[in-house]
Length: 590
Ligand SMILES: Nc1ncnc2c1ncn2[C@@H]1O[C@H](COP(=O)(O)OP(=O)(O)OP(=O)(O)O)[C@@H](O)[C@H]1O
Image (cartoon, rainbow, N blue to C red; front, side, top):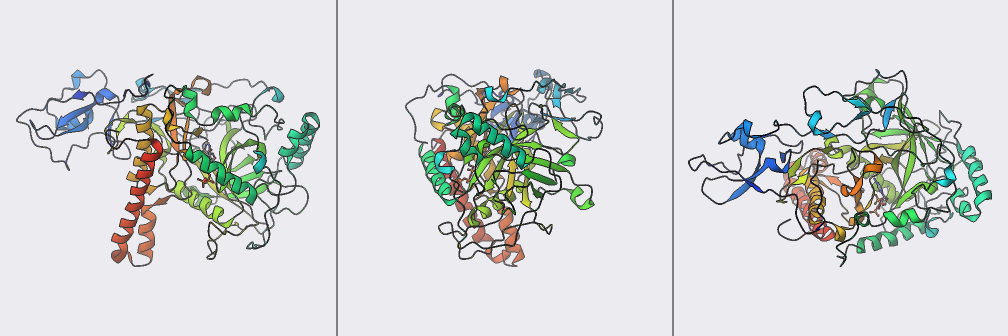
């Protein structure tokens, strides 16, 4: 468990306070050859608790010290006695979030997942044992809530972004794409939503009008420039505040504001409504990962060019991650995604992000009345540059190893942080990058053949946006309200990403998210006293590995490696500098 945060935001709780006494005649341990001990998947020194981390002299009697873990001391052997510890030496283990996934009745044995789907995390005291008895979350009876009485927690569209203006056709690079009826449209299709929203409009007046939308695309240039402004102002909000005694909820810059705005929203029909649905925080087991996404999109959030006045569901195909089973030609796993403008949770300079109900491929289901979960669905504005950034983001997510999407128990030592930090996830869980399919069954992708386009003068595209699905992870942070431990924890996330030779590319506080934790317990028991942080928005992210690949392909890597490396490291340096500024990190002692 992470150490409990202190009430005094300047007091460090997470620190190395123990000292390992060396044998004065013991060996010198070269800086480059410490014992490996038990490390995290990323290779950092790791201790299961703060009491498993020690200051130690590499050279006996010389006061230059470094931090080692209990397992490193065991490997050194000098003065180590296993009996002095009241718990066995253990490995870091992935901590599972409160389970919302389940298998439908009669399919309990179809999954080979270990631990089984629905297993509640039993805590380290029992989960480190060789034989763990998992407790599976029991089925509950779901009472249908009266929709109009419940606050969805989702903000309405800002007036400036709700314009129904159509994207300009002029200058657009055309494709001959007409979207087709999805293979598996369901009863919850567009006409149902349109008519139910119309009913809501009758009942609730003009507020509903905005949410219903018209036949026009939802994403336009006006909205984009409004987004530009809001994004800039949120970046400016990082200045330190006098108020250091902020309540924990205030750590998230906009959580409260958002909820206050929800009162006058019309209710969405079942399928599209996010009310009462659990947010997906688990990894989707590979065997059930969606291959095909049927996107129900009556308000045209995807920017499809429709044939008639009725928006038909649109078929998307997973581009990443790829699995071995993709080559085997087995029956595709089909999931359904339900898009509604009203469920928008974020607006960036290039994209909208929605909380979207997702029906997973059978027999995978969820603990909710409809069997759905919610995920964050990111869609690009209809501009070539925005599509490019989203494609790049899909590529970055595909590069992320699974272990940086999961929380682990214990504490890391992440150089240059001299204080231990929890071995948490760095980024949201990735639920896939999907592209639309046209009526000829071809995947519609926007190729980077827009040499004359730039961020200042992009062209408008008239085909549907790609969709990136990920775990929703809270609200943008406000570092001025952080405790000193939280500031170091957030800073360690970007350092860890850099050790993986990945840069994020736009490190602003608006791209660091906070949510109440711990995620192992049900949402109603979580608190901002034990928050969980993630870095988002990898549209400008890049991996060193990609540069190497490109250079190798061009046969020039021997000549240019040094220069490419220097340029890449310069970007890492700039990003660290920005991270310090954004997170209000002191030059020393962080
Ligand atoms: N995984 C997520 N969980 C919760 N909210 C999210 C998530 N991803 C994005 N958001 C919300 O959506 C907003 C826009 O997302 P994002 O920053 O990724 O868009 P963008 O257009 O790529 O941004 P930029 O303006 O930096 O180019 C974020 O500021 C955040 O409020």
